[in-house]
Image (cartoon, rainbow, N blue to C red; front, side):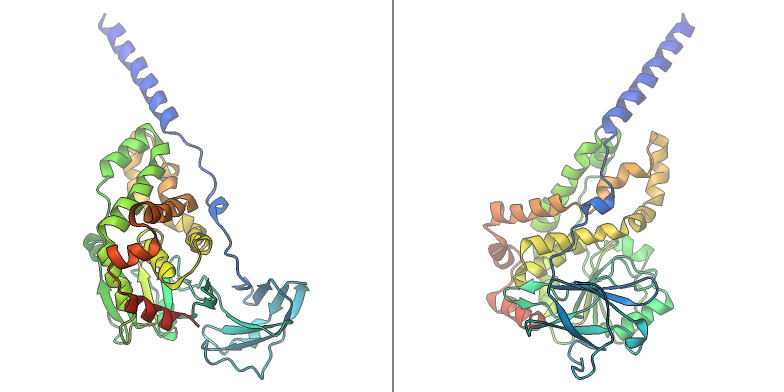
Length: 368
């Protein structure tokens, strides 16, 4: 009899494990499927061999470069090699004099546009991106003023040199106290950089996330949305106001705003700045989705969590919904601003606490 009882318990346990895994299992699309390429008139990327490539929506007639957006010599055109009617290659030797080149593209219709790399290789930092160049109310965001990024605790010496070349003046760290103590930013010895720690309240939903991981992984995206809306946007509105207000203080720019991955807390901060500047929602969502280029790096951050989850028969794939920048979550967050606050402008002025004068100051600094 005891043997039958034990056998029954084993069978019941096996069925229970099978049921849990079958309920928890959710097929999630690959991270690259969530990337939305921003709609831009021109786009610069650096190729693996060091050359640059520019892709344009209109015929390109000339291209110039400089070491600063306001120091581009229009009398010295770069050699460009056509790849097709909308893509040209720029040899690396033509721009090697600049630690970070900025380009001026001239088009057949007589217009011109400043353009630079959006995703930058800062050694030791993931997800380091410039929001410059995006269209905003008939103007464009200035390049080289606001960078969104992951943590700076693993900066190499080359990465630190890159921050000096970018002339960074202010770093805003949105991580929790324990995150900072475990991996402090490696910029404290740089006298030109002012560091501010502004820890955001984060969701207290560890138990709910574990339950979702074990029993129904489809609920993880809903938990993420609640984090964005109820915690980041609702509970941290005033702190985000402090971040945006700091950007208009003398000597704050160029600035880096970052958290651990540069996806969630930083994603909301960047969304709010772009809303204040008048960037359209489609562009904001597309920029947010670019974090998916770093999905593999984000997985590396969760190694300790994954080791603990193995006791429950789970692997790294279980955390995928938490690590992907899902455009639908940001869309729903923008809808939340409309439904609860009456729109972005009212949220920025009433919940975040920005004055009309402060919003105007942000626009004056960032738009050209």
